Amino acid sequence: MNNWNLDKLYPSFDSKEFNEDLIRLDENIAELNSYKDRLDDKVETVEGYIKTLAKSATLYRTLGAFSSLTKSTNTSDSNAIKYINLLSNKYSETTEIETRAKKWIANLDIDEMLNKSDFLKEHEFYLRQIKENNRYILDEKTEFLLSKLGQTGATAWSNLHGALTSTLDVEINLGGEDKIITLSEVRNLAQDKDANIRKIAFEAELKAYKKIEKSIASSLNSIKGEVNTINDLRGYEMPISKTLTDSRMTKETLDALLDAIKEYLPYFRKYLKRKGEILGYENGLPFYGLFAPIGSADKTFTIEEAQDYVLKNFGSFSPKLRGVAERAFNENWVDYTPKKGKVGGAFCANIPPIKQSRILHNFTGTFSGVLTLAHELGHAYHGDCIFGQSILNTSYTMPVAETASIMCETIVMKNALLDADNEEKIFLLESSLQDVTQVTVDILSRYIFEETVFNERKDNILSSDQLKEIMLDAQKKSYGDGLDEDTLHPYMWVNKGHYYRPGLSFYNFPYAFGALFGRGLYSQYLKDREAFLPKYDNLLKLTGQKNVEDVAKLADIDVTDIAFWRSSLEQVKEDIELFLELTENYKK
Image (tube, rainbow, N blue to C red):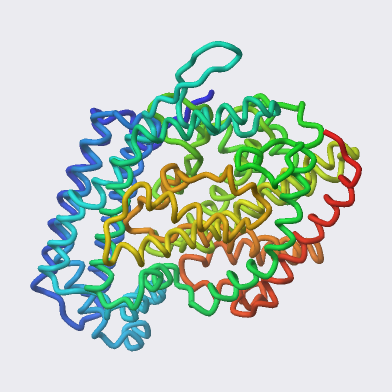
């Protein structure tokens, strides 16, 4: 089955189950609001409030998952849009009590409370985070107003971006035939083995963006402007400060990560220039050659073949990992193929109330698509490790969110390399380098772009032309002479949905963190597989209850030390050097 099944959530918006949960949510909201006038220093009161909050979170996660997942495969679904807005409105009804309760919890003697209650002890990290972040919480009326305004402000602009990009018609001529295809479909052609098709697709993609660039620029300006205003109001030093606080990660860790990537840029550029030479380009690799296959790329996969390939490789890692993937396939957790109205890219949504996940893919049969499937199943495995925890302990942060996904990609790629002949090895090695280049070099360009936009947006409204220039400058700083400067991608700010999530700024560096942290973990796995697996599962289980640095310590890793990131990048450097060696006299 190519489409996911959401029946485990609800049969439909009209179903008895969905509407009964809406009623329960109203009852739960009333119960939460009843605490407004009875917050005291009794352990029973704190326990009661946290239990009610957990019930609320369960209902929101269930109702919200069904609504948002339905919309992600059909962005014009009127019921999905209706209930997403309804749930947002209902959520705002608890803003006042949640704001008041956070300030109340922040002033309690947490240590005394924990000594008196095992239930509160279970939620220790959650309570201490509230206490620590209290300084960024505004008064109740302001928080309520921001919650209400957000629905017609940044969130609405974000929805506009999703609607425009998911329904954008791309006009293209393929094989002498004029066609209209989706943005996801034309971007997938970047992986085509025919250089002419890749170039035509790239040009068609850029041409299509002209139809929506001004509207998307308005979206980006409005979202970043709102985020800047609210961050200043809350007292964050700079835009990245809120992201680091939300990520439970220090600036020291981020700086160590980015500094290490910058040190290794010359090696990535050597790889890109060699790829350009192989493909016959003289001035560096054109942007539309980034995803061009090198080596034996004739192999394509049906969905069933992709599933079998993933299962075989996951089984070599652990029975538990294979078991989660089998459940995903057998229970139809995955929506595979692109279609009009479906959002682009891929994601995995963990749904703790049903102890399952759902994966959106835009699979076209390439090996890269198989790696994406493995990546998203890694997120599902992460979810499986935390589903036994209280729902208030299941929210892990952006940097560690990519840990299991990158591990799963690495498992598939390393095993594929073992069985490959020389031609296949070049193809697989280059596919791996494509991916790691995206999550380091391209991520660096996205980080530079977003940081620049936030800074510029403080005083100016940026035109689409200015945004294109900022993106081109960021790409030049990251890719250097590895890419042909005359064929960069000025519209990368249009198609990356992460820029348009108002509550999730800088969702770029976590991919780099995950890619390199995952490689560090994989090295530990190779040294002692038996000892590693329980340690790995425990690490994933506790990602919702620790900060990033303490999660890493569970694997004896110090992520504030640039030496760790260098050690992971050394692995990439070795792959680049092997690729250069294998392709020294290579002719495509």
